[in-house]
Image 1 (cartoon, rainbow, N blue to C red):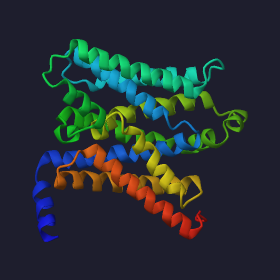
Image 2: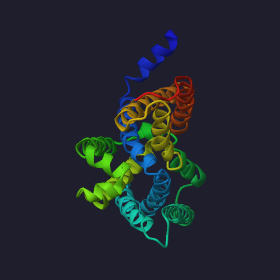
Image 3: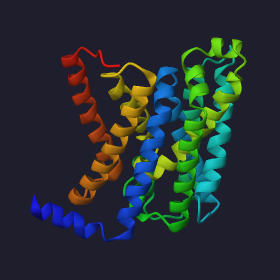
Image 4: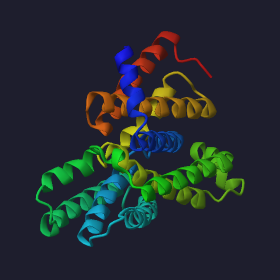
Length: 284
């Protein structure tokens, strides 16, 4: 145990480890806050769909030879989030079908572009790194660090500022409209923020594992708590704790960061489910 603590202390002296922890905590916090809303609105898989869009956008940025891919990926993902929201409200194309259509299409086009235009000698490694995160979080540039910090801070601030309206739109959209709340506008804001979170989270867990950051904290908190505020606070603490543990374990054990964080999330969900069964899930 002493050796492990000494090893962690030594690693913490490196700036890239501290940067990874900072960004990881911020991304986990943002994901958990809006994850509760997505789960309650039964739109959890929007995260999965947008993650595939982000993968396709990253492929386009790679073909264009952009050094900093985040701005282009962010723009494309945000536009797709708005289109996905609008398409999902179309009576001819239901929400789940719209998510499947956009996500599969973006994933296929992205992989095709990477095969046709890639100049890398290790295409399979690049694809695997993009899909599952690899160690990207440990190699963040200064620009990516600042972008992640600023966007995460803005996201948390928006959630706090619009908390009451997000609560209203989440539980009863029709009633919210009747009271004068512009539900459509707030749904668009939520979709755009989720798109921002998706782009940020790609550096942490990769495009295929992003949904775990959105779903597991919310579902875990719901095993014990029932009120929206309690679930949100618990989900945030759960997500941040799992992210920190996952990053530290991956550094010590040399395992992929994203997969390790998701595995910790799964273990945490199991523990919360057990606690919910033992307590009867009556906490408020």
